[in-house]
Amino acid sequence: MRLSKWFSALLLAIPFFASVAFADYPNRGMSMNSVKAQYGAPQSVKQSANPVKKRWPKITVWHYGTFSVYFERSKVLHTVVH
Image (cartoon, rainbow, N blue to C red):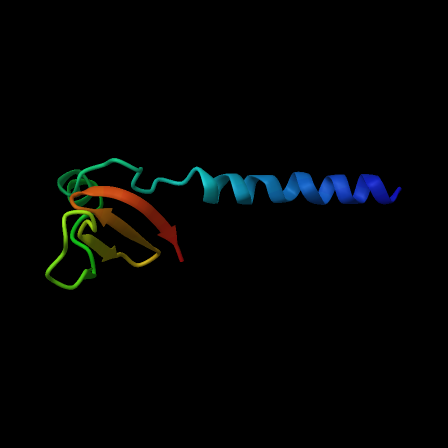
């Protein structure tokens, strides 16, 4: 009996996690222009301090309401959901 309750609870949780995992967020490798075209202008922008050496690429973070996008130079490196 316990197993069936646990299994049914798991089945109810799967759509929630699937919607979060496969939601429409910027993908790795997208350009800044394509992110801006698809999601609009960010609420705030932070850039790494200057000067940046060639082996340490410039990191830029665009903050949107529910997520932040990290760029290495001009390509998406990672998206963080808040």
